[in-house]
Figure 1 (cartoon, rainbow, N blue to C red):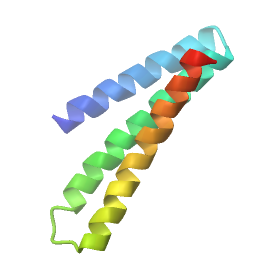
Figure 2 (figure 1 turned 135 degrees about the vertical axis):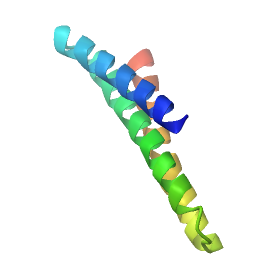
Figure 3 (figure 1 turned 135 degrees about the horizontal axis):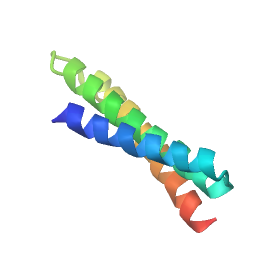
Length: 85
């Protein structure tokens, strides 16, 4: 299931990149970067899920959760900027 979600996010990233290449604009550039960060967040989330399956301390789990969340925050922020700029 994670591979399907990752494939879909890569697909939407590719579509947004093609739209930006076809008609360059600042909005499409921000949208492409946003979708790229969301794709990266999905990939990091999958890797972290596999890594955290082993017994990890509380501090390590907090670090993993922060590392998992940051790409999503950046990605959705970029999408917000692309819509309202």
